[in-house]
Length: 214
Image (tube, rainbow, N blue to C red; front, side, top):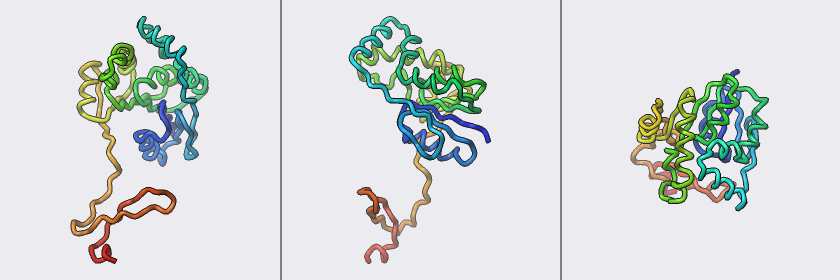
């Protein structure tokens, strides 16, 4: 059975990553790397960094000097992930976003590399002046340098995919963040909220009008 690693610097319950785990787990041996833990598959835990003022100041200094490789390889989560990945081997690695890609390419050891780009990275927080000043050029560098090295890239929408193709000369397909498919109820049925037993959340059940009045 082929081995797949899903690497993302997010909690393992990130919706897009979770769907990938659910879809692929019946056909492949699944592993994950990220923040948090899961009992459903092999999961390599990486600690979410706690940024001190000093760490932020040093990072901004190197960003200002455009020393982007130094910035990336000194990220706490990347340094920890390096130690845990160096002796691992996989057939396929799915990297979520540009922040995972340099690490994956360095330690792929012959694995095929797939990249899931959730957003258009160089403009993700463009409403912030300081983000545009410090981080937008850094994100652009990561995309320009590493995206062309991936075997396959996809994103969440056609517009974002076209931006990656236009600006970085890569083929970028689309896999939307759509919900799982459920067949619609007959048009005359009514939605009835039903409280779940072990939580305060509600689910919707559909009933014939005669049943709904009971």
